[in-house]
Amino acid sequence: MNLDLRKSIINSLILAIGFILRQISPPLLFGMKPDLLLTTMFIIILINKEYKTTLITGIICGILAALTTNFPGGQLPNIIDKIITSHFIYFIIIPLLNKFSNQIKVIICSLLGTLISGFVFLLSASILVGLPGSVSLSALFTTVVIPTALVNTIGGAVIFNAIQLSFKRSNINVF
Image: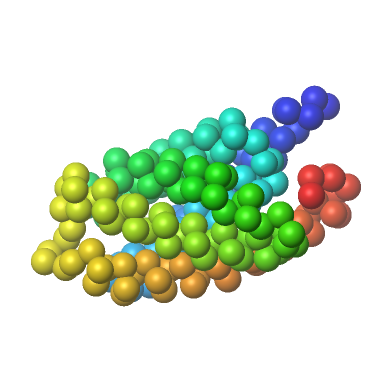
């Protein structure tokens, strides 16, 4: 099988897992749910290490997140934040992590990436559609984004280990 086709299929399956997990994960605080689609985006970026894949994955994750958002008017901010976050991970975080294991990379990317994603989402939402109620950006960041980042970090490690184990069992060499 063509290597590019194999990677595309694997990326699609990982995105599907993230999309399903995004749908079924229960809300944490103020009705906000952890964004496990975001953690699968980080895993895809770490596996492929290609700019083209990073860009496409960021766009697709943004569209999928926009389709499933609970945030009023959060469609465009979701697309913006996933594209910016994917670039942040690719250009800034990954080059700094070359000396670490894949497990540590996923943990760091999930934590920092979720914090960046949450900040970019809230900032773009406040500019484009406004934040719900009279809640400030800093209050939402503290009460929603930070707990979500912690949950995404744990979820990212679990998802990564499950994907790594399934690759090992099926003799797929990606890592």
